[in-house]
Figure 1: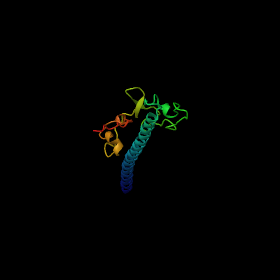
Figure 2 (figure 1 turned 60 degrees about the horizontal axis):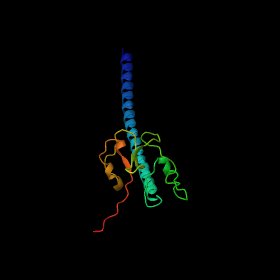
Figure 3 (figure 1 turned 90 degrees about the vertical axis):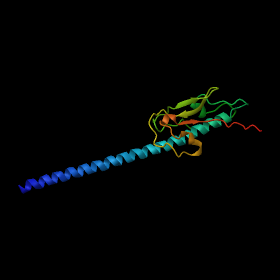
Figure 4 (figure 1 turned 180 degrees about the vertical axis):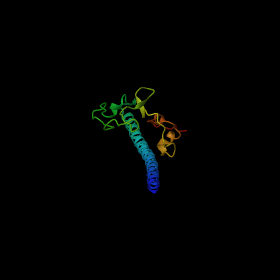
Length: 159
């Protein structure tokens, strides 16, 4: 009879240990997943800035007085509008959220692409505390609302 009680106690202790290990592993998984999402958000902000800067350089280096946005993202890889070929990006980046090279594009009024955004509808962890150039991203509820747009600086009117 004593032997049966001991094996029952050992069985309960083993079950308790498995339950604790499961809870620890689940918590570790959540922390790891959150950490990975934060890393992908940082990468999205970096890639978005590089797209915005490349679109701005393409626009500002338009030959002649008429400024134009790129027609496609591939135009940023090789700009042959001038005598010397210019490259504003080395490659079309992978969207860290969807893990594809497909991006949403923000069309410019006069034609072309003035910005890009992720096609992910996932909810961002980061909703505030953005740097000065990205303050407009605060409070957005989906990554697809994080729009990286180049807007030319308007000259000030002397008054």
